Length: 179
Image (tube, rainbow, N blue to C red; front, side, top):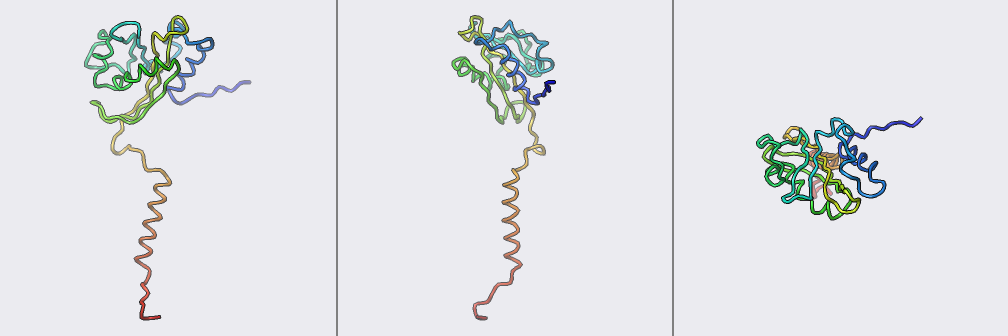
């Protein structure tokens, strides 16, 4: 019996779903249904590249800009000052690559300091020309108390240095006149 493995990273789950549909080239937007994503759909968005200006076709609940209604789908207006604006800077690269583009990092935005991972997945009606993107982003706020502790190696190096320093203070100094 085949064992089902649950992928814990949101962008990996969305990417796996995209790969299922990308067997004969780029998948079509119509191949994806919200129910295929479950609650991951809340962290997804689609961007229509055929229209000028570029527009969101869909923005998940977790990514919606509280300051603007979803009825303002123009990317530049809707995403201003949000994580979506940062992600949208990668649109030309993702569309030109014609392959999944994953990226992430730490960023300071109006909402505070965020740690994020994102993926942009090309979609095409004709299987060749990228005319829309499916995106997914996982993020969390970084609070001072929650900042990642230094790596174990860095901690060990500091600990060793501190112990050496303490040992050198405790060690009696040899007097040159004793010899």
